Image (cartoon, rainbow, N blue to C red; front, side, top):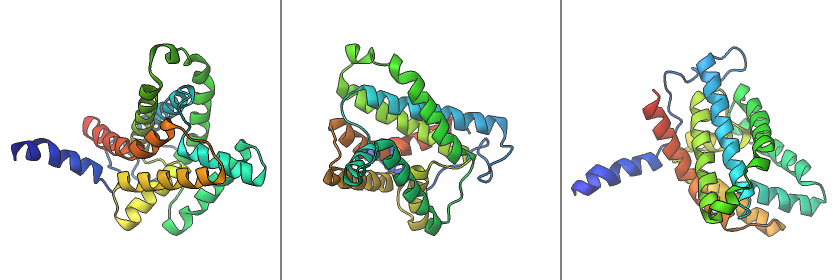
Length: 227
């Protein structure tokens, strides 16, 4: 009983988080202009960590993220490049913000640029990790870093990326745990992408299963350590 009260119950509460915590450095409301310097720095740092995690997943050669699987599948079906396919999917996801009454912020825009620039800048310098670390470990590491970065930039409250906005919007609207909502979204995306012809690997499954819990852990950890 002591074990349950000491470890199990607190851990279960983390995975049942249904909203993004607020701290002293969180923006009071989603905004585009003149955010506080500390808040903006936290946003950028979180997005950098997010991009670093995505980069680790790429160089692991162990399976791409669920959304990339979907982009590959859509690209194959409508005969376009994966870049255009990703753009189309992002626009469609953004349209789902309307019924959820979500508002974009500067974080929504920075999400696009910082993650892309991080991946473009660090991927060429990370392939040495394949020589010293197991691909399975890299898949878990990359997924954890994406979850950690998500927690940091979401708490900044300057606007989520299109996909994270969908996650937090559904969680808030229907009162469901963020970890469960994220898992459901990622699993559905993987399934549809695979049916359409996208490729997946063990790293894809790892990401789909663990990204939700890792985001929840990050939200709890960051809000507790940096109030």
